Length: 327
Image (cartoon, rainbow, N blue to C red; front, side):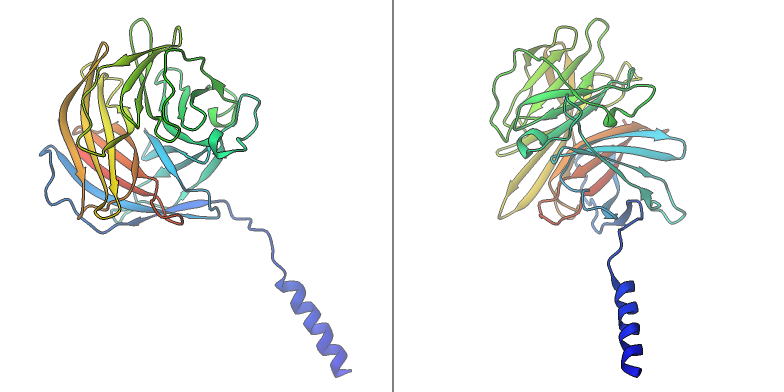
């Protein structure tokens, strides 16, 4: 009888030990990074802190390639695309200790024109993202299968839950497969809004959205040997003095010295991009990584600039660096 009771107890214990589905919704927390910026290259730019993004409930917060930040109440809403064909959405809301509260995390696959998620990495390699500030439409540039897709804002659905539309752009050359349209930003114009595209292997193109026709833009050289373009972002669409000022992020890597980044301020006038100033150089003791995205928001004193990384480690976590700029 004792054996029977023991067997029944063992069966009951085994039943409780069976795996159960993970029901908690994904969240992300922000772990403060060590490091400082002892020698800023621009006296008007100040490093305010960096964070490692730690996701719980999902393993899909990886490969972040670009971001867009907007103010919403007492929080900042962030959207970030990944080179696995997905978009992550979360919020930065200050806690009472100088950091940020844990945030709900939503990750959605980008959808092709047929409303399906991308099957192959060659199709899913999204690198640049920008937003039409009037309509709210999103534009995403892709390497691999070279193209730009539009994800339309609607009253019913988030643009990230709708099928994307491939723009029939003309005039673009065939870029190297893994060094193509790394950066894109929306340009407001009185007659013909456009996309400014930055290419990792070098060069800039302007694509007017009325006719989807692209022409090459004359731009400055990279910050140095082996530096490549990773992201572009208009500083401020609401200020006519800044709506053609553009933040340009470049990266550098070699296995001996590791990664480096340079953030520059450029100005677009017609079909010419002009170098204005260096803003940030990311070297130790700043936390270094493969920073691929830049975005800026207006503040009372100037602008807050955000950089996000696609970690060089396979199992690495994204990093978010924040700077204040007082022009």
